[in-house]
Image (cartoon, rainbow over all chains, first blue to last red; front, top):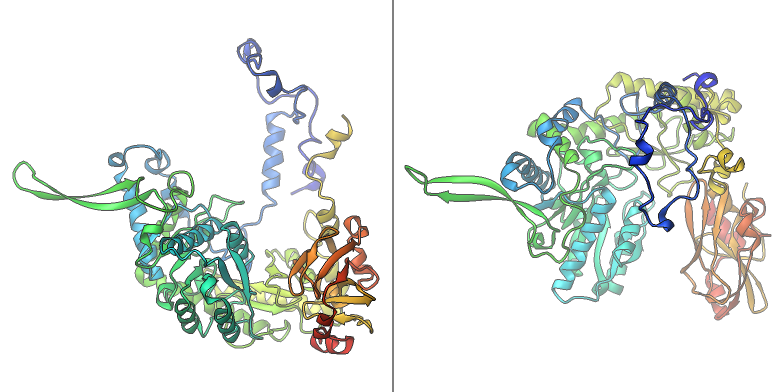
Length: 505
Length: 125
């Protein structure tokens, strides 16, 4: 983007009285706010920018060139599983027959859509090793809350109301304690060992102290460091023994896809981020989808509405036949009721279903192993220059603790900024919090060896620059439209409105 | 390099307490402010609030992370460092001079469970 020509805010391009539209002359008379109550009417016109259409189009088209997505380049943002969103997903989801559906139309007129819905529930259940799924939750965190509500409803159904605590490893994603708090549960932290895995002895101690108050335990596996929890079977058995349920946060499911299943590890409830593991777009805050699955015996606690498959025996004109179809159950007996509007984000589900069918049961087994291979290849190639705090095999992502040689003062932030100069999206930085200079790389299974090798070369190059020309790295980025931003000022005094229009008023 | 001031008591969660009579000044260590990076917000309790040893009494937010403040002792908050409301970066300038809360101790024996500068330095390295 040419910032000299196009780097203005839309407000700066505004000229008083300029318009990008023309309305019929009697428009003002036909559209008046006179009938609205006085309290709801503006005292003065909103200060909106006034521009011609071409200026508006150029402005936003040029801004869009500053976007960076998976379609632009390598995007190794750890913990986020930024995998490619295949075009066929969008083609199918964009079909009129799907895009034109109304959530209230009679089930008999949208059997195909309900079949997709039902089949996706079944596919996820099979991949997760659980009994049944709801697709209603609209995002991962929404799924977490729904899953915890299922756990709470389960205990309440048994009149075991003293279970108000949720055990969460100290390395967990921040959404876990947040979801537990929203669900009215108290968070108790389980310590990690030096290698980042759950301290089973600490867990045992907590269960001895407060086992009767534990509603459940939330875990990701592989954990936030990308390490598979070797004692997961023991952990789930211990929590079950104490009467709690195990919640699996599907954030890192991509590593396991095709290799092993949360249900088989003893988890009772889980959510899946379709935008991570099943190739739907991450979006800018949505639309997402966070289906929740449960093991057998917990189905009745899932929210409504549900989509069920039925078989009806019909008489027929000549001979009896069986009619298979799908029905919407809005009235099912559920302690949770509905967790959102209608069925969740159907177009997202459609894309995930297309992804599952495109790969098929054979190819989907390669997802986890390939994601793991890519992450380990990067780990082995970079560990000479970047400090690897935890050795051994990682799963789908690898965490470094900054540069090995920190003598030049170049930080993880500087490395991340310098990567932008070379056309890469930065990895996740300063998370997880277990290390001071965390640099978390997740390549996903999609990338070719050539792409990964090119990234590794650049990472080596930056480590070299940190030695020979540290100022170059500390002041990066240099090739982006905006250079190093002042993140302290941005955090302390965020300017979220266009100041000039206010200053002039 | 992080500084470790002698004469203070330190917790594993990187708070310090400077004891003066029945009162204690609680803040975060120099090591903690280094690790956090530029501090942009300090969430503090109110005067007269009770704090409990081992439990959260506020949070420090930096450009890198938000981190809970864990009280090293139990007691009642008698004063908060109001300067931190507008200038949280004081913690980066001098974490030991800029305490966060002043507490009237309810159980001075809790101080024995805390570390001296030497023991604290050992766990940081």
